Image (cartoon, rainbow, N blue to C red; front, side, top):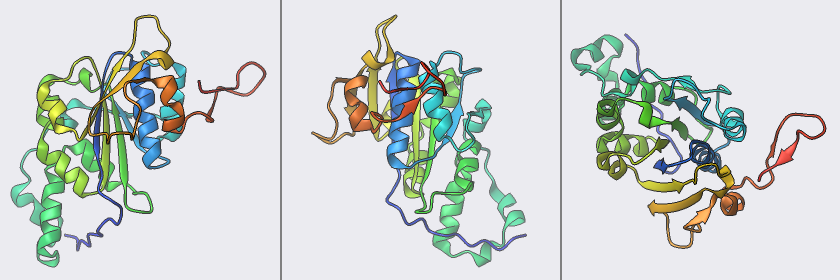
Length: 243
């Protein structure tokens, strides 16, 4: 057994954000940009079998800022509600050495889906924050999406632990999933159009005047802090800037 010392995070509370609609690349770019606004690096997990549906710009933005420079593999069961830990906790820690408040925090942590537990257990930013971007959550079984990601108590624990979660969902999410998130953005992309032309609308959680809405992703680039970020490899004709 192990003595446990739980260090309280020092940053402001986290937030949970849902980005849904059409245009996989546009949604991924917005999610990555929102994550970068909060901190320079984040964890990235991808729910689809591959990233082939994303354009190079979206992949580059996600990969260059993610902690592992690529997506973590997602087992759908790792996003479901874990089985009760019950008496197993006493085999892991000396519970008597933990103050009641911290014991309650630990119990809440162990009720999170295993994927979120792993990301929370990794090194935090210096100010105590943790950021996870989860792309293409629509690829998960609906039972996992609603049982794991739509639970209000899961979102409460993340915010209390100063952890932020940004999820992209292709299509219209179940109402239970949408209601669970603090901030919600809808993206509309016309077939065959460029990702910059996708229209972003704030559905919930953005303060008036905080973000232009509705607006094209191209118009939001300065607000997202992307206007001067270089993309593309070295050599003539390859380096360029957004948009």
